[in-house]
Length: 117
Length: 113
Image 1: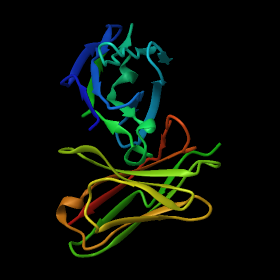
Image 2 (image 1 turned 60 degrees about the vertical axis):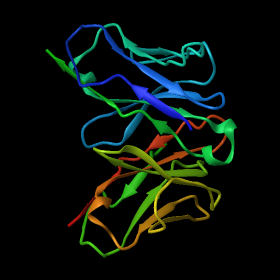
Image 3 (image 1 turned 90 degrees about the horizontal axis):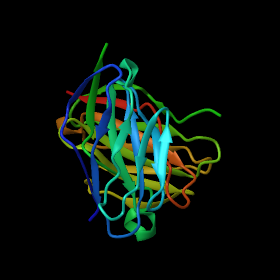
Image 4 (image 1 turned 45 degrees about the horizontal axis):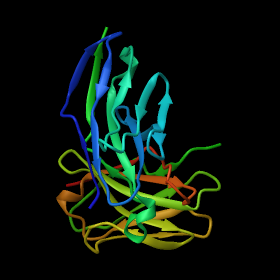
């Protein structure tokens, strides 16, 4: 079945540091890939997405490139801010696999990011 | 455009009781998916409804059920509550087409005592 593996957390950085959160996946078809962010006490917000190989998703200074050859979708940001402190989830949707994939996102375990001033 | 709304936001129930949670999707979205989030198991898919039909179901016992109405609003029901059902229940809506960009509500925090 499909699976997503994220780097172990938590990650603690100083403001303006470079961020990388690793994400690798296993899928039977050609999945779409997503990064979601969850702030304390809230639901998940879509951060960025990529729907095919070599696509780069970007939003709010975050970027991730869909690498089919390495089955990866690593999240990066050049200069983090205190306000980026949250939990980040990598996820995939394998819609083209049919029935058992309808409406289903498969998530990684989440990475807690804390940014200090 | 209004986002996904979930009611209630917080619930406290006793073991053995049943509970119904509600989700109103973004206008125009026909698909609603439900997830359970716990510290131990992370985010797990419960089921998905599209145009009032359940299209997909995760690996949860039959105590977990749902439905969708003609206006795309959805409810999920958990009967005979167990302590392990304590979790944040999230619903997400999407157009239900193609590659499934899902938009999540704030969740309902269920505590079973």
